[in-house]
Image (cartoon, rainbow, N blue to C red; front, side):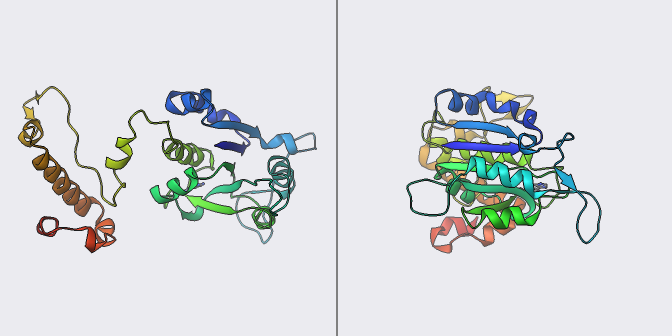
Length: 247
Ligand code: ADE
């Protein structure tokens, strides 16, 4: 997968050299480049923002540098000419919620282009113009406001990269983790069996895999009901068995 990130703070992305994302970059699974938006400014102050039309607090990112950045990183028109245009992702608290389902959708793309807004956001015409040539999605991490899109891109990239084939050593973990089946994952334990007077639940040491599966399913259901009743409401009733209903 190819990924381009445009930001006025390229230094934010130093952690992308580390850990499994760093490894995915080193082995070519992820071809990632970070670009400084100010590359596409032409005044001595390398200006990227200005006051909002209509008044209001803060500053808005001017369209010209963004237009040039997107022209450079996504050249071509929306046409079946064999030239693949990226999917443009713009982190914003006004975007659609970022979910595991969207992470899976993005993991299937060949080229993602992230535009990191700062200040109050990017002039809307940048997104409207880009949308005439490529798919554009504004994405929100949650119902709170960050200083800018950089941290959101780190989060989105981490969620997407671990879904790429070959990135996780044990792909089975993708099947069992929280959100894989619309439920939160059950609690996890490792050695020692007893620690500070707290014992690992007996069932997990029993070797009885049917009983362990059932225990994990019950714990998932109880945890999800307590912490995320919205997820219980969204479960497909056909995926529930009799014991689930009793839990
Ligand atoms: N930029 C500012 N706040 C954000 C949020 N909640 N999600 C994504 N990008 C943002």
